[in-house]
Image (cartoon, rainbow, N blue to C red; front, side, top):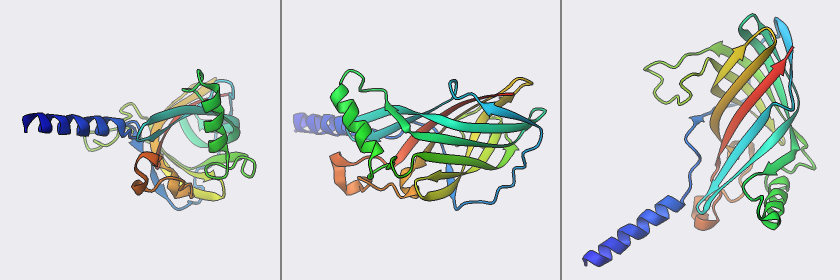
Length: 224
């Protein structure tokens, strides 16, 4: 009996360990699209496309995949140290997987699937866009126990258009403004099904499941 219980416990532990979840990060709040309240005041900073990157992590019961998107355009307006407005365009055709570089066949297969109609359908929707609708100063206090980015300086709200769907997302970000440049970073999870990307998101699929929560890490640099 003891051996059976030990085997059962070990099996459950291994199964639980294999059921990958999205990395721990701030959970973006998602609502319907909002009117833009952020007015472009102050100096304009143009996105440094070479120094800016969107990193994503998708998970499934058997592991995870990590990759990147590059930006095609973007700008930030700041008045002294206060960011007043901003927008980003994501070049969806730059999707690249990073963890399968040693298996070119699987890498190409995964990238083709993500680029296809079940996911981003990049031929039909080659760009995604994020427009700040509201931005405010933010410092995590004792009451903000769920905020993981403890050195966040701003709460960013913006309309994210992905494929033919637009939703407003809200997340904490660390933004540093100087006379020469703006640097911003954020790390949050969003539910892809909110944008109608529901492929293999049904929990009943078990080992064929692809987690609906996707981790997004933003590293943005813009220069005057």
